[in-house]
Image (cartoon, rainbow, N blue to C red; front, side):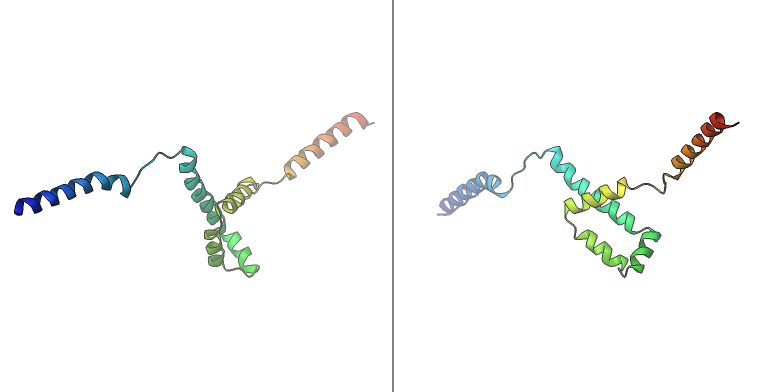
Length: 120
């Protein structure tokens, strides 16, 4: 009788060992676009959060009546597309530069041309 139970349990365990790996977990290949999307979304959020941690931005938020910690919570709640849009807008902003230098250069050149051709 002991051998009957032993054979039955062994057959059951062998069947479970064959059947279980196919139904518990399956791994598959993912494309680089799927892998890059998750890291890109986190990088976009980090860009927006980095912008919010600047002292001038934080003071401007406070003057508008927005707590910086509330703004950070809102950034965490953004969708990936919204975070990407904000990060692109932040990255496209000029880094403290203005076009005043070009205007000044054009004025100096125009004054030089006027002085050279119209002096009497």
